Structure formats: structure tokens, C-alpha cells
Length: 151
Image (cartoon, rainbow, N blue to C red; front, side):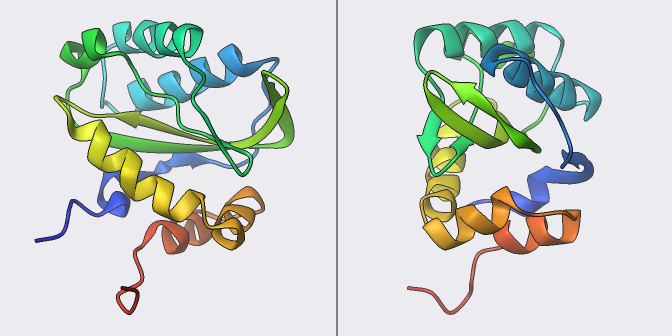
């Protein structure tokens, strides 16, 4: 049985495609606020996301970062969820430019499975480019839907 579909964890109102951020911590806070707004996490999870970013950069390449909380923050997760925030002007992420942040809330070790599913998509340069330039929620959903015909 396949892992939970990424799209099932992503509410349309959790796709915010025209954001600006002062720096990477501002971008992470915005991801956290979107997870709070989605009802997926308590406010304290945002602090856990900032702590993670202070310890280890969540930049993954291809103009994408995947902010998520520390293990200590998992008690603040009410249900697994994703948020997608696009920063058309880019955000300086320790010398890299990030245009898309995919915020993750996952209870237990669930974020590992989510990260691996996301990495498959986001490390495909063509799909990452499409995500960086997406202008509609439908485009984001299409990109996060696994292709049935791929190996």
C-alpha cells in the first residue's frame, strides 16, 4: 500500500503562491502560521520549526526548502499536513535562493515518509521549476500527485 498521498494532506487554502519574506526565519514563521491556520498544529510548533532551522537548514535544493519542526515539537501536531508557500521574489537561505517552502507537520516519524515523497518530486529539476512558477492551486496539486505510470 502506498504512503498517504501528499495531496490529501494539503488543503487548497494552505497553498499561498504570492508571499514575500524578509529572511528565511520569516519564511519559516509564515509556513508555521499556515499550518496553525490549517488547524494542523498548535502555535508552539512554529517555535519548533524555528529551532530546527537554527540547527539545520531546511534548504533541499532546486530553490526549495522544507521547514518542519523538531522531534520535541511533535506533541504540538494535531494532524499531519502540508502547506506550500511560494515566494516569487525569492528568499535568501544562507546564500541560496528559495522560491518555494513546503511546510510539514507530522506526528511521530511521519515526516520522514513525507520528506522522501517530497524529495522525489522536488529534486526533479523540471517539476521543481514548475512548482517555483506555479500560479494556481491546481498546478501545485498536479505536481504533488504521483504519476501512476512511473516506476
